[in-house]
Amino acid sequence: MLDVKLIRSEPDEVAKKLLIRGFVLDIEYLDELESKRRKIQGISQNLQSERNSHSKMMGKAISEAQNQDEINLLKKKGEELKKSCAEAENKLNIVKTELEVYLSSIPNLPDDIVPSGIDESSNLEVRRWGSIKKFPFKIKNHVELGEALGMLDFESATKIASTRFSVMRGDIARMHRALSQFMLDTHQLKHGYEEVNVPYVVNQDSLYGTGQLPKFEKDLFKLQDERELYLAPTAEVPVTNIYRGQIIDAQKLPIKLTSNTPCFRSEAGSYGKDTKGMIRQHQFEKVELVQFVDPKSTSQALESIIEHAETILRQLNLPYRTVLLCGGDIGFSAAVTYDIEVWLPSQKYYREISSCSSFGDFQARRLMIRWRNPASGKPEYLHTLNGSGLAVGRTLVAIMENYQLEDGSIEIPEVLQRYMNSQTVISSS
Image (spheres, rainbow, N blue to C red):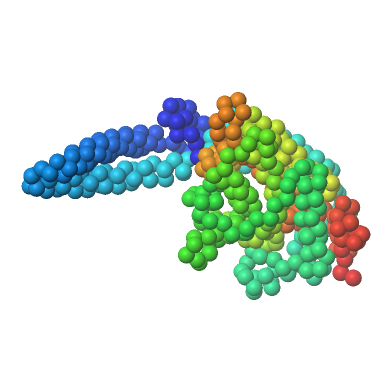
């Protein structure tokens, strides 16, 4: 959530920045709500003050044994004041709720480096790495490869659940597991992250804090349960919420956490896109990188997350490019986002495999995550960041397509072979 004081003090500047991401700030509506809140709050405070004074007057009248008729009149007046206070408080709560609902719908301010633009066509390529392999034979996509090997089964997955799920078998399932292990080991042992195992089910407060609610409820899988629980759309949600409501000592920063979880997304609004295969599924696994830092370290932390994600692709020798997202393409909570896109030979195109974002204090405000600044000795909002390190299923797809051989078998990248009992090739034999 944005700082309300900033919106009040610099509404025009805030509105101008939000336009970069296509959001129109309704300043008149905000002013109207603020004016209404101040007016009702004043009335409420005056009524409460009058009620307190009346209570003292009534107490004195009773203690001095004044005329019972006078005491009854005072009691009646007290009841009227009590009712008026309750009505004013109710009106104030309604306005506060309206104000909170609108404020929670306002996205984060884009960083100064974020380019203008309404969609991915305005994203800026930062760099490319790796050589795109030229195949001396007709290539297959990952669906054709996996089904021919008998190791990718979409028909059974549809029978078990619905479309946009998959069943992996044999060596493909093993390589999927090996990828998760390789990513976690690299981030924990080489990049200094602490591995955490978190719930795959989250509550409304957790989703609100990271920005998925209320705006993106249609993208979530909600459980039919009176506890109002949801399947986690990304490990970002449970991992970031570990520190909800806490004040962290400066000596503990930066906090760097990594976790491998399944992610569940309804993919609302994506009908017709990537309907076949493992590119866009309702359930997939992702190794997430999350950092909590003091505000002065944010830029450096974002660079480190991007580097840690890119390291995985370089070790797998998969060609990729990194792009800076424009204002119309960044997520609701993000101030700046870099996407890392891996090359898919069958599509002759780079596809997103990691999204690395800085949120500034946007999530921390919603989650009340603070650090104690040694300079002031006071609690202040820290900054949160996260990135995919990487999406496991899409990494598997990229390996299958980039490492395919003419006979339909698939080479296993060298860094994964130790996780697969020194096996070097996946084949049907």
